[in-house]
Length: 222
Ligand SMILES: N[C@@H](CCC(=O)N[C@@H](CS)C(=O)NCC(=O)O)C(=O)O
Image (cartoon, rainbow, N blue to C red):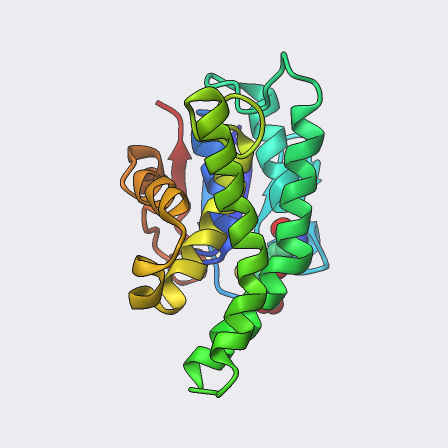
């Protein structure tokens, strides 16, 4: 029996969880849902009603996207995204993900809204987002000079890349003409490389809605 994962196509948290599953080469049965029509089965497993939700065959429920990633990579981590030989890296990665979720993501929502409704505060709200974006750019640049590689934490790519990818992508798409010429060349190159990768394509494969067709589909595995 495979784990079941409730997922939402463009939700950045669900994207993060799917990326974790793909990078860990795990297999789950994916149930594509919408926020307007959450399945009873999902709410019974996780009454707080956020997506993604992973239900393991032993009935354990994991309903935080970062925890789903960590669970998947603890099963199998072929690219050592948990950096097992550098014990300080995982706490540093988790800390950065938490700052993304707690500070950057809410500010990103304000920026998106300002742009969508042509509010006067678009630039001001974008600049608040840029505090985090500039930190990411700086991390890539510093690492690049020191080690010849471009990493957020430690000496190689990690869980952090996949945990932040959907959010940086959202930011880049709010005002694309601006982002393309903004002073974040390393972050732009990092983003482009990921968006063109096979793993990203796998994690973004489209599934029919589970409620409509009661059809669940396999995600991950090789
Ligand atoms: N902290 C949660 C956040 C997940 C989350 O907020 N997902 C959104 C969709 S992108 C959601 O389910 N919102 C509830 C709703 O819209 O009803 C996680 O990391 O999994």
